[in-house]
Length: 224
Image 1: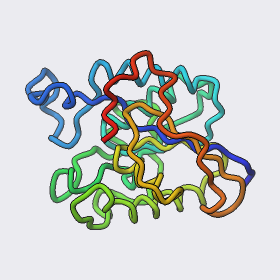
Image 2: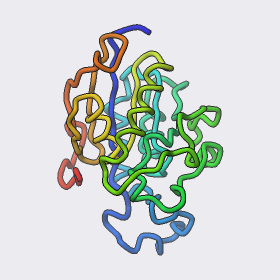
Image 3: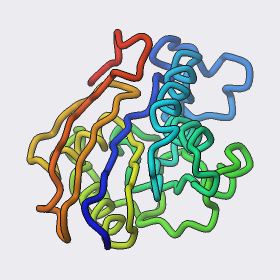
Image 4: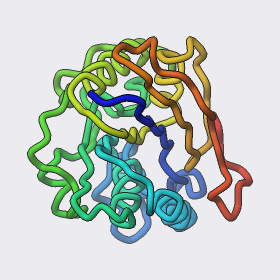
């Protein structure tokens, strides 16, 4: 590993069920289960603004929760990055807190199905967890901390270079807890940055959290 390296945390952009409770009645939305709401039109704009922010940023690996809203956010960033070999690795370990997901398993699609919709998804990626091996969790956002800790430990050990992690309110909060001992909620489409200066999680330090400077409209980002 070469240090220092940057680690970026992105919460997905605005999702359609934030603005329309009847979203599954909209055209084309019947393919999604209740836990897998995609981006709203505003969310798509936010994702492009994230893409502009990271267009010239050196990123070696991008990992995203497999839900549609997180994959589309990550995929938009990857498509706009100057590195045309960059891909999105769908990692269930970064998914939403499980008490908020469908039962018995979250309804996100596997990587091969995601790749049919999002061309830059890495269908060959071997994830830390699958939807079927996710550990049981209790009720509450902080219940995902253990699962998220295992996920990021393995990612950081396996992969060199600058890393981007795209997740949800709960999973991004959990990463903050693992790295700073503070479960921090961040707004949608915001950026948090850490720098790792050596081997081990204790060598990762927070630079800033929940940055919105790339967003044309930073209002109502639903930080919880």
